[in-house]
Image (cartoon, rainbow, N blue to C red; front, side, top):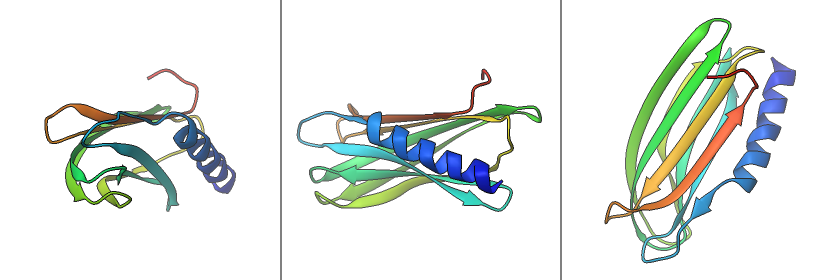
Length: 128
């Protein structure tokens, strides 16, 4: 599991650095997906990092598939943040094993309901 967790951490670092998007405007933020090793699996946290002050709503969708089956969950949360501050908006823990595929999508919306940020993380190669 240590090798798998290390590879997952590297994949998260690379994906988080390259795939977030954010929109300019009155409420701007970055959607950040953090993954940490946990006993027998991982803990996935979605964070809102405010580029400007505002209130943000979040939806984090997590889908996992592998030899043991398939699971899907959606978590939501909100945060009112000053520019430069971040807050956890959703957390999910789940088991992972070699051969599993994980897809995580975090979407942030501003006070007007418009999308301000989206980040997607995909680990593994079998189809969901």
